[in-house]
Length: 396
Image (cartoon, rainbow, N blue to C red; front, side, top):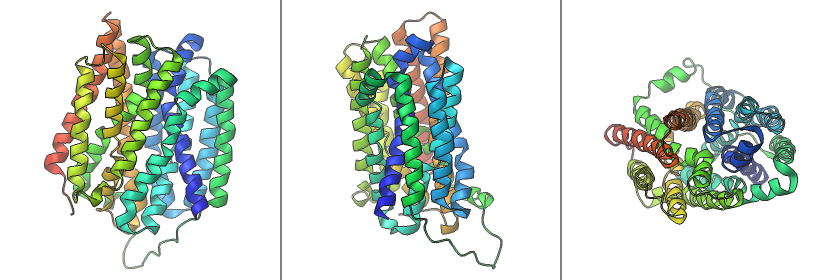
């Protein structure tokens, strides 16, 4: 069982790498195949949206079929093929198609881990174990920073992607070999099986879905693409320096995931944890919006890191939602929450890319164009936080 968890964490780390790598790939993709910041943001948005769209079928597969087979098949044929297509890309279309395929491949990885934890671990340990998976797996976020720049210098960006394709296939095979599926649930004949319609009847879940939609979007979106362009365009940093800046934000997100996992043992309220961390995310985000990160690069990196730390409250959002789910709907329930969380990043990336492009089209200063992006993330987070604060019910 331990070997299985190790490979699940490695698979999640690979997923984290793929969602974060465009920030470092961005400058060289711009010079070699003509991708601008709005193009990389769009590609990342498509990754998240494809990933999100897969959550409903993934949830059904987890509840009805083998979790490890689901993870192995999708990661092999989506992630492995997607990395190869990316390595062969000649422009935005190739990168978009590749990121969509990789999104399909990565879609079952985290949910397989959470499903197995929810089915086999004591409820009181769910938040802690989820935080550990997220925190350790987020080392993939770190690998998509400075280590990625080293690999690009050694192998080139296309060679790096081919190596990633081989690694993806290796991890997919290990998932099937070492992961153990939890015992199948015995369905009684007392009534019809519960499905998505029953899940959507849980009205108390709706405010949680909304905060999931907007809470991770600033951290995931800024780390995934915008920080690279911002540090390069506004502060003139090289690819290696951009890698260092993204590394700082990556470590902040790892520490945040590890911190928010067990924090419910200290604060006996999911609502206070989730709402408080979302409110704290707003502070550095609003400071970036108002230009506090424009004067000095150190201040900008610190603000990005704080956004990453406080937006890493996913374990507690998931824990809050899980308390409302009956056992037979755990698979579809956690994937529905994940759909909103990941889908929120995808939607925000596409909208922010269009806002950025429109602002650039108006011949505004580069700083102003990025400010519009930060303002968009700030406003959407405020709206979601207000609904959650007044509408969410805390079971404890």
